[in-house]
Length: 301
Image (cartoon, rainbow, N blue to C red):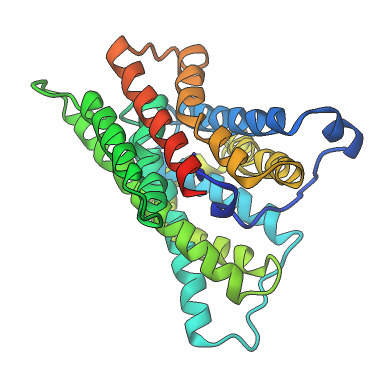
């Protein structure tokens, strides 16, 4: 998954699971840390896509979320004693949106180049950022992003897989927007990082039936388990640690602008790691989404 936000406030939960040596982190400028985090996330997505030759996307999602949950539970246990039903319902909604976001995104990865999937998914947090602003200028960013998606659509082509991929990527974007909303609400209701660990348990419960059923005995192969752990490490643990360190040393708006480069980085990872060659129209479409994301982040604060 990208699966990641336009601004620092969109991902309030970050754990230093293993972390970075302080001296090494201080030697890298915060902008470099953000770019390394983006690269790590997209390399994790690329590794996950390579796993699709061995396992269905839902099974890979189960491995990613399962290993991530184990790592988080090792340092942060859910604390639900004394929580109201409303609080628990918010935490459940957070976990459900997290699980379905990853399921939808990985299904889109199975049908689309990674750069295109990430660009379309970005419409979720972009739309949320625009809706939270009342500036008329933001309508321009919506139009620009919509033009980018229109360029990506396989008009007049018999490309059912592409249309399905676009649908899954758009659905992932919608769940991403829900993830951002429920993440903030959960952070306000749960103490410390217990809300995140609670949501991770919920997300594992959500994805495990389809993940286990589709993966079957293949999930028990040691090499597959190792690769799945690698996906979780690259997609979650490393980037979260890098972003936490970057946010400590830079304004959130600057962080959000840098994060807007994620679709372009995803396209480059697709090109050099997966051999996914995009044409000029597709690069132009990704450029539209990147510019729209930067514009919405700058104007929305």
